Image (cartoon, rainbow, N blue to C red; front, side, top):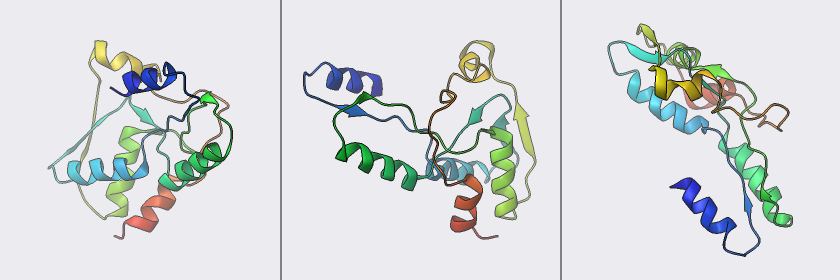
Length: 142
């Protein structure tokens, strides 16, 4: 649906700018809070994410809004790439929650994109500055 919306805007003839951002820290936190309620937390071991802070995205959007339409601009990832099991473990530590982490393999077909890093931003893009660890310290207390 997102690609369809982007295509509609791009084909509209109206000047436009599109910024794609990585997963927001808040989304990762919401998912981890729910998963940590399970007796063991599944974590696909080949999935890597580069979560970004909403404030970094807001600052970039404000900058783009004040500029001229630029079409599709480079993605905005967070400052660090994390393996999914590492994100789970960091959340469990921050919340003093004791659960085993189950690093699971991805299915061959659907998992290919993640194994190859196809969900990650290109090398050399400008990254957000606020780390997942800083976000956790701010939002979660053990």
